[in-house]
Image (cartoon, rainbow, N blue to C red; front, side, top):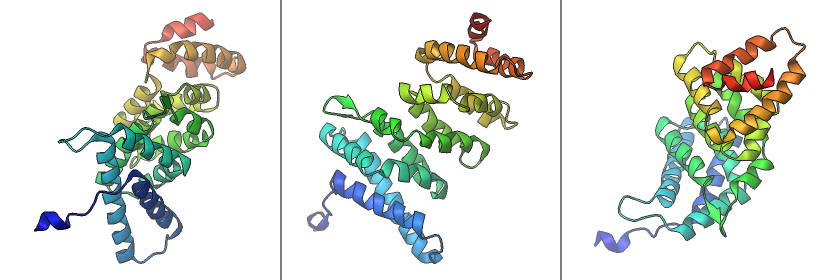
Length: 236
């Protein structure tokens, strides 16, 4: 008899709507009583898990391409992607891990044959301004690092990182005393060899901009740790 009353799976649109409502609640109700907050957090954790199952399958069935496409479209269209990133520090470890997988997967989803994440990220590059400083927070550093690596796989984000003050911040990140975090920052910087050509052009520009700084040699010396010292030699 139990099978007769099994709840009907929610549609991608319903999942995104509930996730958005819960994320907004957490963002706007900082003084909610503890019990109510725990209930909402539990609901959100369950919704994030359901979304992950839609995107990755449940071990018995492969994910539906149509369901994945609709879910991704709604996630980006209604800015739930941003809300989820901003709420990561508030999630427990399990929900945070599921959310990280969801965020990474959404960036690879295609709608009508094209990736939609690059266009969204182009209009929301300030998310990088949130993710990169996360390396200074030991509680969230690895999570933000994993998400940042996925974002940098999109050329628009890679260019933004390499053409702004973030480039200098990366050198500071790899010198963080915490070995795990510093290594993660290095992995992020090296995320894809396909961007080495972009990196070289950007480094040339950066070198010319900073050549009057007495710290420029120290900044670029760190590149040797990434195995791309030839970039520096090319600049000189």
